[in-house]
Length: 53
Image 1 (cartoon, rainbow, N blue to C red):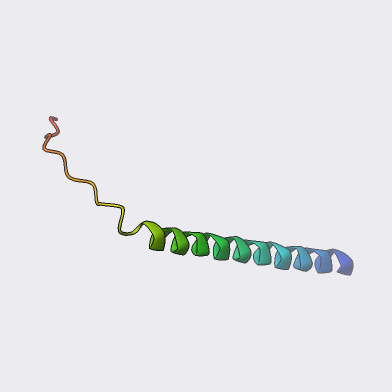
Image 2 (tube, rainbow, N blue to C red):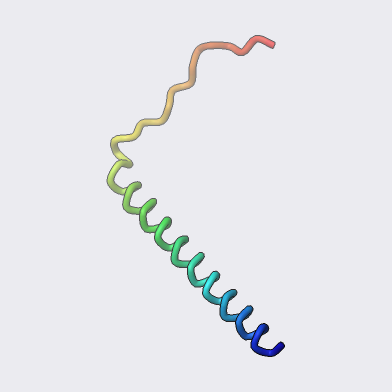
């Protein structure tokens, strides 16, 4: 029974480590992509069309 708890805790730690690594990777990609294309992207213009209800 004790070894099941140990396996559960080790698996949980590995899952948290993988999630942190994925979050770090995504954060780096967004930072890198944002610095390269921030000047090239213009905000979308609002359309002149009105929504009829």
